[in-house]
Image (cartoon, rainbow, N blue to C red):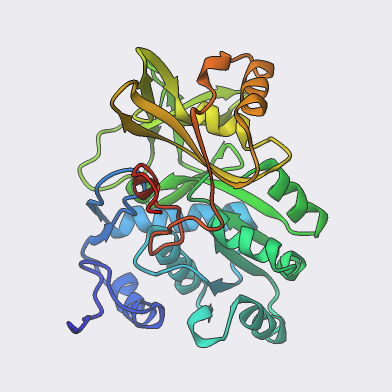
Length: 335
């Protein structure tokens, strides 16, 4: 097995190893870091971020949250979400609680609670929140002043369950190219600007952008802004062409995620000899095509957008950072 050398040039190592590298990096001139994107919707790529961009993002987050606190480090440090947890902790001079040191998230939360922090924070991806809900431990998260939730869409049912358990969820939007989340609950953080281009794509500007970015960087996400609040509608590059009809997968997924019998859903396009592509719904829970068509029609969309294939899954394939591996789901499931 090759030896992993802790590094910030290409962010590598355990959470504690990366934490130990951050002090000198933040105190010095700080060469740009290189960090890999998750590859959840395409090939992973390496993004360069300056020290100034990373700090702009971290500082804006702490300002939004109301000040520094102790974080529970529950994400891989090699992803932007986890890396920023360490940066925010370093800025505050407060060592985080490392999930890797404990049996599970519940045990790590118990340790954090024992330290009686003035403020406590956590950053998760939706898959982790789903698992806590299924295991009956959502209420454990009530100890945190804020739980940042990003990386994928989250159903209203799960968010409602978290709210009922007393958990303060803040949904984040951002990516590696923006040094992490830059829009919280639809509102831009300090210094961040957003606009919608003529083709419906979201463009962002601000000091948190990656090295070499233009003043306005246009994402592959579709959105709309109402009263200064952003709503993400899906991805511009996730449109199925099925029988000559363009079907936006994000819109279909967003509607079907609200069906009461659906716990979690991922909608993808798969190659098909007859249709070119078929819209496929991978579902945790239950769903049938009639119910899907009815839900889409109620939302104002064509019934023909209903998935032609519906598969029930117990668990979805995941990437290292906990996001669902959408590319894996575009391939037929092995029997």
